[in-house]
Length: 252
Image (cartoon, rainbow, N blue to C red):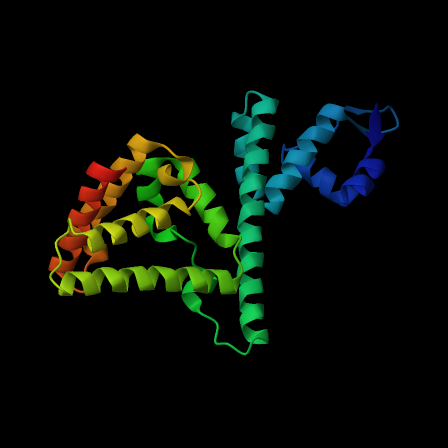
């Protein structure tokens, strides 16, 4: 089966002039040209046009598209790459939609929109580290889970975290031992908090990796400057670390 230039242009939502321009730029030649000068396009040409239009919609210029097509050996690989790019674009748009929804919900409720909720994901700041430690799936699943929450759910989650941090800080100031019943109950609460985050080893029920994750988080609270002051001071951070290590060793 093949189509004339007018038929293809109409189906693709472009003009015949655009198709001729693609031909002049070496992007898409007609499959054949009839004796009357009419241009015809077969299924292979249509598939190539589809790829050109996809790249244009992703914001690529014609020179860049020409390079991609020239370097490509297997059409199937190219199409799979475009599917992956489109899925990423869909995920980006979905996140933007959810962000705008959060803003609308806040305005309708008469609340001041929280920029940290509207513009950031659950673990965007730590994306590279999460992926390096726990893999791409752990980041993507947890981020999708976070972006899928309503504004009220996100605010409630953040409040729970703040309450947990405050409880840790109060216990540290009271001079409790990391091995005390109260400190270990806070450690258990901390682990339950982790287990509510999809994609983490604790959520997946992976005991060995869960132990490593809990101990690793404890170490980060002390060693990583990004967490400086999270538990009021260095002594508070060490208290949390030691309590989590003790819990991981004896109760997980």
